[in-house]
Image (cartoon, rainbow, N blue to C red; front, top):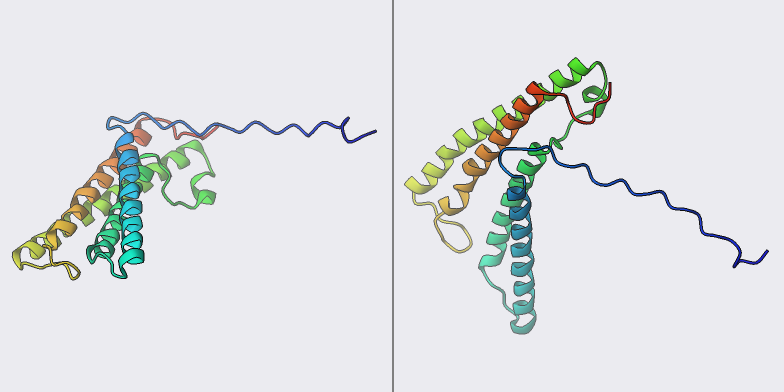
Length: 180
């Protein structure tokens, strides 16, 4: 038998990605913000590398702005993860037991995330107010610090609302992916 007569083994079909649950506020908001922030980070970094390569100096603002964008990226992606119910959990506990137990744990987890980020939103308003009131400026380029810190309560509130929406969906219905 020659090697020409053998057929390659059949590959198993790839399962499509799970569809997102319907939400009142489209999940595309977080998706597009993530894409735009990642693109901005890539462009800023690439521009800084080019400038440094050709001129032996760099833009002073790129490091400060990149750190800000990475923090915003983490928060925006966290909002998408909460809305999709992809936040960290110990699956041994969350996926075992009766359907009522799984649903109760899913509701409890979503409610705790909503409370945590609601608290962060409220407390970070104080930080923004202090930055504004005391005229704090950023260390790198000297712009008002509240330009950066004002996004913390806004995005934290968005995460809290996404978590509350997840809580309401779990309270009303069956936990997705559960079979019983």
